[in-house]
Image (cartoon, rainbow, N blue to C red; front, side, top):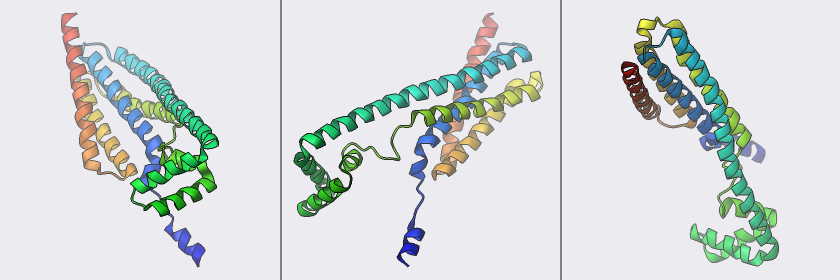
Amino acid sequence: MRRSIRHRHRESHQVTRLGWLRASTLGANDGIVSTASLILGVAAATASQGSILIAGIAALVAGAMSMAAGEYVSVSAQSDTEEADLAKEKRELAEEPQSEQEELARIYMGRGLDRELARKVAVQLMEHDALGAHARDELGISEITSARPIQAALASAASFAAGAILPLLVVILAPQNWLVPVTSCASLVFLAVLGVVSAKTGGAKPLRAAARVVFWGGLAMAITAGVGALVGAAA
């Protein structure tokens, strides 16, 4: 009976998806916005459809590699910092276990426990996993929030490519004289869908997320198209 109750009580929280969801959403959004903006900028400068397609493909490849490299470097830096803090905490636990126990107890007191209960909790948690308790409650490092550079890099590259290929398909299918309006409208639709999907995956409000990505994506595309038109006119 107890096993059945425990099994039914298991919960799946959206926060467990934060790592890959953030990287994937950022990659897909950047893929759509940057590729569509480049296409619109080049198209506004009166380039041929073939040149626009080549520019878009180059943007897809370069952007995916850049996203992967940037995400890996940034998340690796976070991972290095976490490892350094954990190594420092491990030394302190070995050299001053009593002081570390008091420090953990004070953290629990700050969260509302009385002194006696806070000390008991600190003692029991440190007996079970001292480093894990301090990592979680003192440093804020947990299995959910810990940095995963490879996962973040792969998610960013794949999602960027998936987002970037959508405006490229529009370039292939749309007639050249309709390329700018069709690419603009289609990319805004892609962004709205991305906002809704990412919001639903993360348990957030879809309309707000969709409006946010459509506004900023539309602004980026409008500015890039305007610069392309000015450059094309000057040339």
